[in-house]
Amino acid sequence: MSRRPKSPGELSVVYYRGRAYQVDARWLARRRRVRRAVVYLTLTALAVVMIVSLLYAFISSFRNDPLSWPPTLASPKLWPPNWVAAWRLGLQGGGNGWTGGWAPGRRLELSVVFSLPRDAPYPPLPRVQLLAPPYESGAPNPAPDTGVEVVFLAERVNGEAKELAYEIIFTHRGSIRYPLLPLAVIGPRGGRFVRATLAPDTVSTRISGVYLTWKNVVPGVIRYIFDHYVRAWTTYKGQGGRNLFPRWILNSFLVAVLRVVLTVIFTTMAGYALARLRFPGRNLLFFFIIYTMMVPGQVTYISNYLVVRDGVFGLSRLFGLKTFLNTFWALFLPGLVSTTATFMMKQFMESIPREIEEAARIDGANTFQIYTRVILPLSLPAIAAVSILTFQGSWNEFFWPMVVLTEAEKYTLPVGLNFFLHYYTSVTGSVWNVILAGTVMSILPVLIIYILFQRYFVEGFHLSGIKQ
Image (cartoon, rainbow, N blue to C red):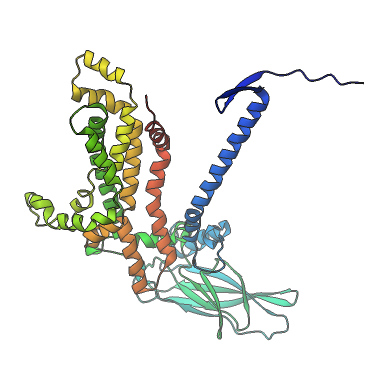
């Protein structure tokens, strides 16, 4: 019995190397879906690869030892049971489950469990040492007047080992409230730490026994989770005891916004002149702009420094300054007009149909009115793209601000983070979790701006290459 052949479906025309071919429309649709899926999966994979470092830095900013090997994404600060424990200890120590603290007259109970071989003799009670608050905490010294009592709770046999549970009772006998209570617990020699009410920050085995340390045993939820971020925000202080990290953020934001405003003003005017106006030397000027895009910025650093040092040919004297060094003027004057942004604006404005401009002239609009009322509103996608790129470049700029700024109060955020690194290295050694916390906070503004204006950013890049 012969099968009846399938009737052909709807056909579509496909052009290949200048010739037209007829193919099955359903096959063509499936092929396009597969190609689209391959493109999306490839872009997704590339995006994942690019954000892995940021994601790892973000998670490591919550870890107590981000340089430990092998690397891991596990962090006690991101484990919800520890949040509950931090809340309860904050209530016991300071009466506040969010911010914690160690208040006069409060009583705190901390449970610790160690494991020993089953046939090992019973060890003495664990020793407890109250540690002095860290230098950057702002807590008064010395350590708070606190009574400590260690009580044996229970024994539990688990296979070839026995678990010994202890309860450590703290009583605040002083009259000063402390923001934190750091301590160390030394467990039995030859033992192993099993668990505690709140996971310790460090666990190490020494000759004297198992050494457990807590930077703060009464943290509260917020201080426990975001401790490294709080330290990054409040550690380094300038004149008058003011925190410098928020000052650096404000400096970077003001400089970036000012550069965006000035760049948009000058590049839109330059792009409009090069794209829509006719004047002698226009092509030569555009060629010169393209040529300057090929010159690395490092080549002009010395000349720019000398110009800024001399006050931009004496212009600084109009502001009562001998030089522009160590001022915010030095940060944006050398790069006042971006050649890349000018090129983008010219390419975009050339894509706007000239019929719109001619209609405006017929209605009596002059050149300036056409620029402000016709061209600029139609160029908003390109302006958004230029603004995002300018903001990002200014926010992340490091070398030039480091050269021209000398006072810590005037640092931008990248220079401040570099100073932050050297400050911690010189005082306590590199505290990478705090440094990573500051780095993550510095990335957030650019990330938020890009997410909010992504549509305009992509549209501006897409339309800047269209020719009418």
